[in-house]
Amino acid sequence: MANYKDIIIIGGGAAGFFAAINIAKENPERSVTILERGKEGLQKVKISGGGRCNVTHAEFMPSELVLNYPRGEKELLGPFHSFMTGDTIAWFEERGVDLKIEEDGRMFPVSNSSQTIIDCFISEAKMYNVEVLYNHSVKTLDARATDFIVQTSQGELTCNKLVIATGSNPKIWKILNDLGHTIVPPVPSLFTFDIKDKRIKDIPGVVAKNVEVKVLGTDLVSEGPLLITHVGMSAPAILKLSAFGAVEFADLNYNFKIEINFIKQDTESCLNHIKALKYTLAKKSVIKSAQFDLPKRLWKQLVLAAGISNSERWADINKQQLEGLADQLTKAVFNVTGKSTFKEEFVTAGGVDLKEVNFKTFESKRIPNLYFAGEVINVDAVTGGFNFQNAWTGAYIVSQSITKT
Image 1 (cartoon, one colour):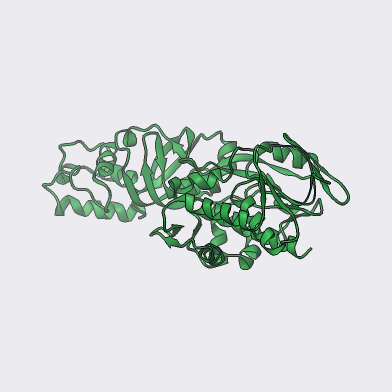
Image 2: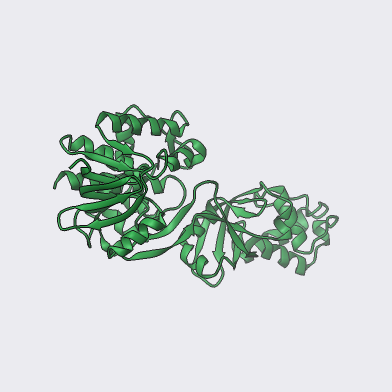
């Protein structure tokens, strides 16, 4: 049959290309075809990391790596023992793509260009005779006893083994649901918080290096740097919360309260520290004497919020003002009123229910010879290269599973 392919991969993104290349390399006698709905593939690779492509993260212990996955932590432990960060680095280095580690652990190509990764994939796909069919949008899937019939915008194809690597694609989820898979409803993950508050209104760009953020009324808490933006707050302390709280925040319609400890000290210790300043800095202006290594502009806003004026000196402030300042520093409450997408990196929680995937092979437990790679399943991660590592690991294990059958 002219339209028969041994293996079809739906989705020409990171997971799709990685699966196709590794399958084709190990199975030169079998035809491997990628179906991509767009006129070009690897679009998320292109824009990732501000166009530099955050390939993975320098975390080399599976038990530590899984902690970055709000959904998938338990399920990915075994797969990460099979194909891990170090394997990713080696895979790219063997193909002439050297990676570097940045201070925060993120790993990028030394070239600082995502095009390096794209060129590597395109070149490898050609070398191993992977067929890439662009502008092929999948309309329907039919799982037969021995094969799959894939109806696309360009006609019908048949294959023996099928890999779904479409990321967060509602149309494909609907098709998989019709085939009998449970789809966990998708909600946004990795977003910044919209906050209207006079304490932060005039200080966008200010970074507090290490804060603790709690979501009131929940068990959600995170730590790390916090960035004040034109619309609210961002940076790891917020992004981690957005990922781990993705489902709860959607249920709350993105309206909730957070409590921030800007100095990561308890209120009593903070109060004792600033009480002592009444004497040691008695004649100095409170607003101009930033403490706890806080940015001056943030300190000023918290001082004003505590009811201390521009002109007051440390000697002048009373017990109530001191307590107010300690509260602002250690348990400042802010109202979150919405969310904004974090840069271009839109990530979704949701997808194929993890109970329906065999994580030794990434094969469907419902439909034989159907495999998944990447974010089509209900796995997502915090920012920092972790979503790509999930894609590489799943795609590689799929390639090994298909090679053995």
